[in-house]
Image (cartoon, rainbow, N blue to C red):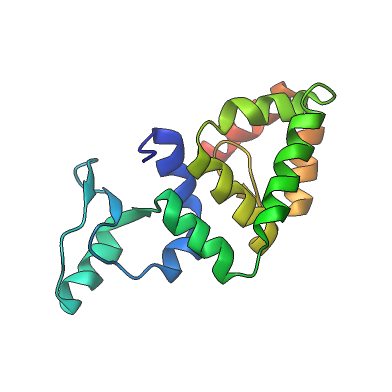
Length: 153
C-alpha cells in the first residue's frame, strides 16, 4: 500500500475522489490532525461523518481498480496508456519528469483514472485541467518556479 507523501498529496488534491468516498472498515486514511496513516476499524454511521472531514482517503490498489471498472474505463485503455507513456519516455522531457513523479501502481492508476474520468493531469502538486496542463508544461522550469512562489504569496 502506497503511503508516500506524493500519494497522500495526490489523494488530498483529488476532490472528486474524496467526495465520493464512503468510509468502510479496512480503508487506509491519512489523519489530517496528527499526520498518521491508519486503517479504519468498523465504524458506526455517525462516526463516518467525522472521519470524512478529518481524514484523506488513500485508496488501495484493489479499490482503484474497482473505481476504474465502476466508471466504465476499460483496463485495456490503461494498459495502452502505459505502453504509450513508456514508448514516449525517450522522446519528451516532460514524460521523463512524469516517470519520476509517479512511482507506484496506486499513483499510476489514480493518475490514469483522473485523466480518463475528469480530464485532469497530475503535475506533482495538483490536478490540472487540459488547458492548464498545456500551459504549465509549455513553460520553462524557471517560469514554473516563479508561479509557485507567486501562488504561495
